[in-house]
Amino acid sequence: MPKHGYQVLPAPLFLFFTIENQKILGNFLTLMGIAVRDADFDIRQAEEELACWGNFKNAFKSYVRLRKLTRGEPDTKKRDVLRVSLEKKFYKTYGFRVSALANFLDQAQMAGISQILLYTGMRYEEITLLQKGCLRSDAWGQSIYSTEVKRRKRSSQDVRPTAELFDKWVAIDILVDAIHVLETLCDVKDTKWLTATVNGNQSDRKEKVGPMGNTALNGRLKVSARQWHPGECLRAIRR
Image: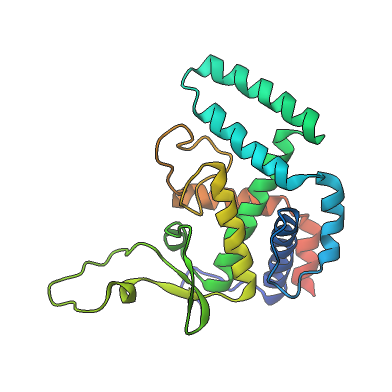
């Protein structure tokens, strides 16, 4: 039974969100030349994306370099001039605008985060602790490990190995794909945090980039959900 104030997500809607996330994550991995683990993903779904984006893998690398160059320019006016110049060169090379790629990367990040939330039941404060390398092999096959111990202090009486104090969740293939996408997106800001904003200005010119806060994550998930056609959501609920 749900806790007071919470509602159970209807199974058809859960499936709808899963499939929509699956499409975005599978397309991104295919475009990057990374094998998709989820056996239910139809590679034919990515054909339209492949035709649309062209040389996506190199475009992504160029975008990472573009962000690094603009991030390294401390002068605001010079940074703006540099950004315009680099974006024009980017468009001339790849045939699509930086803004279009940035929007797709945002969608991929939120699809990855949403999929993890759906299949693990993590709270916001738990998913924001995830870092690169959190996916590890163990007796279950693969699991997602929280890489920081939260709200726990090892006392002198606590003799358990440190690894036992870490939270972990079993990672089925659909979650392995989500983690791979989020780890790839970390390259944009050269960060270890899987939930650091990809295209937002948060800490973009600071030495250390942190994960999104709970409020920011909630807002981004709402924006992501609005991109899906409401009619499709309603049809999913009524099935």
